Structures are given as structure tokens and as C-alpha cells.
Amino acid sequence: MAEIDGIVIREASIPDFETVAAMLRKLGAHVGASPKVTAADLAAFGPGGRGHTEILVAEEGGAIVGIALYSIVFSAWRGRPGIYVSDLFVEDSARGTGLGTRLLRAAVAREISRGCAYLKLDVDKSNAAGLSFYEKRGFKLSDHDHTMVLEQDGMARL
Image 1 (cartoon, rainbow, N blue to C red):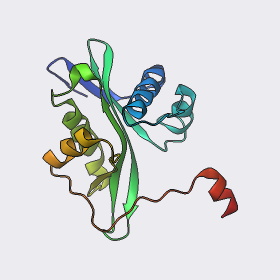
Image 2: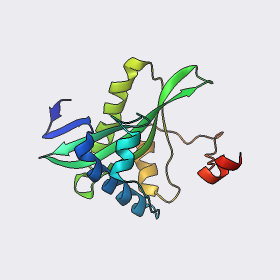
Image 3: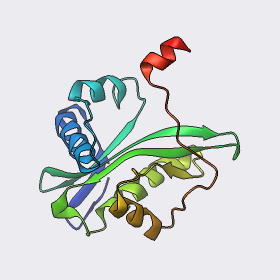
């Protein structure tokens, strides 16, 4: 990917996974959660592994300052695939610079050629700054969807 203003947005590789996992733990702490993700998890399920998630990193001066994790999902309502952003994180030092928007744009630019027609994400209810960030970029709260989760033990019982 191209460098703009000293920042390169590119696909993450195995040497990045420890930093990405640490950033995901920071994101969790920001919203009061304790993610258990490790570099090994990202290697197993991310790019180069099973490919369940794509990972973009924003790098400035050789240091990763932002990340976007996303997956491709299919919407029967739209009849098209879309991008589901599971995690977007920008270090405090890079907030307010447009980096979060650039990461989202990079994901869209990569996936639009695959026919992706929408971008979807969830925002933690306690993350007012995140909600504001997305609303300023045109995202709308869904009136008809509730996020529901069935954890692994429930999946086994199902």
C-alpha cells in the first residue's frame, strides 16, 4: 500500500501479530473488557492461517499506530457480501489525525473489488467517543438489529 504523510497502511504479517494482540488488549481495556487474544491466535485464524479475519496495520516510522480487523460476511437481505469490522484501534498519539478513517477506507478499497456492498460494525455501548466517530462518518444505528452471541459452551449444547 502507498505511504501518505509518513503512514503506510498494509496487511499485517506474522511479525506484527504480537503488537496487534497488544493493541486489541488495549482496546478491550478501553471499554472495560479483558480480551485473551494472542499472537498465536492471530497466526492461526488471521492472514496466513485459516483466513477468518483480515488485519490491516497503520505504520509510522516503523511503529504500528493503528489496526483494523475485519471479515467478509454475506447479507441475504442485500444479496451481496460486506465488510464486518470487528476491531478498529488507533493509539492515543495518532488519534484525531484521520487514521481511523484511513484504515476503514483501506479495508473498503481492498474489498470493493470482491463485490462488497456495505460495511458493518458494532460499537461498545460504553464507547461514546467511538459512537461519535462512526456517526460523523455516516454510520447509522440499526433500528432492527440486536447483536446476539452464543459462546462456545452454548454452541456445544446447541
